[in-house]
Image (cartoon, rainbow, N blue to C red; front, side):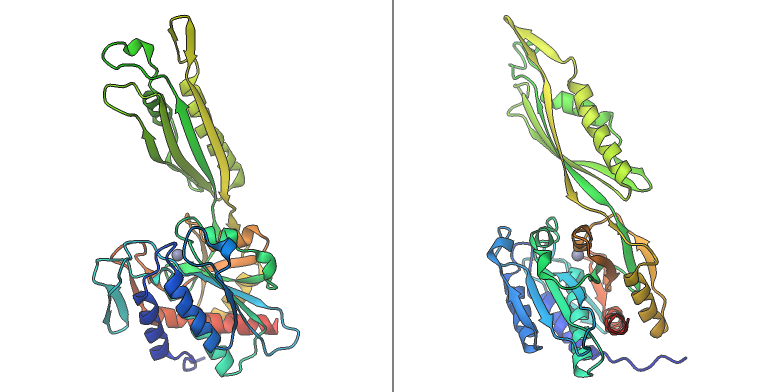
Length: 387
Ligand SMILES: [Zn+2]
């Protein structure tokens, strides 16, 4: 069956992409792009709510929630979501255009992560409405501070949503659906030793730094197994080269697609620290000083784990087939707002939206990929209304 001509207005999509990426929006500084998007969405006929104070996580704006009424009575609403912030460097962004390829002058990221997702969604909604294609209500959530820790999504009150199913658009590639992403635990560790002069009386000290080093040296880190990773990313402590450091603070994480492995790795990391301090003591005068450690592990976000026979996967696959394409599912080691939304009980997956070489100054986007993504969204929303 020959593919039908695309409904997507590629010139409009490209102009909007250039407009949005040129508006820099590093995490906590999404205000300018949020105002731009709010005005675009209002112009498209949406009821837009945004900038809620409680959702401002130290930045200059909050999440945006836009609602578009559907034209199929009784059809279930559908959620679409992307994030407004970008990683740095992103103080100023100068996109360079070569045909359909958009990149930067390599002084900054492009911010196609996640503005490729945003423009694919906007274009899809325009097409659905302009052509009066059958669709239920559409709820669009544009978040802040995804890159800095999924904070916008974490602070978003999902009880405001009527949708139970939807798509986050926030991953590199095209025509791929992320259905599995790990849960993560964040670890904060403080090792307490005892300060002493390093030259005069080192035997009266307990080096918190050395204890931490011993713990880390015996720790499984990096890719622990095919489902699990772990990292100690920050170590801070010490005052001077001639003082035995009495306190070191570390921050780390572990992620796994498996809940059991996540807890086992977290326990392993905790146990390495506890083993490293065990029995480390020094007597100064009549007082025995014992090294000790505080390990605080907390869940950072839940896993994304959508079965291949779930409704959202079947919808996207059917949409791709309608367009003469195939859409494979895959897992990733990275988290997205989809993890947070899934953790709140929504049936969501993360659709690739054309971004490439993300989180680098070599980031680029092929507008054709964003166009294909917009087509997939149009078809998915249309099929959802018919289901
Ligand atoms: Zn992203």
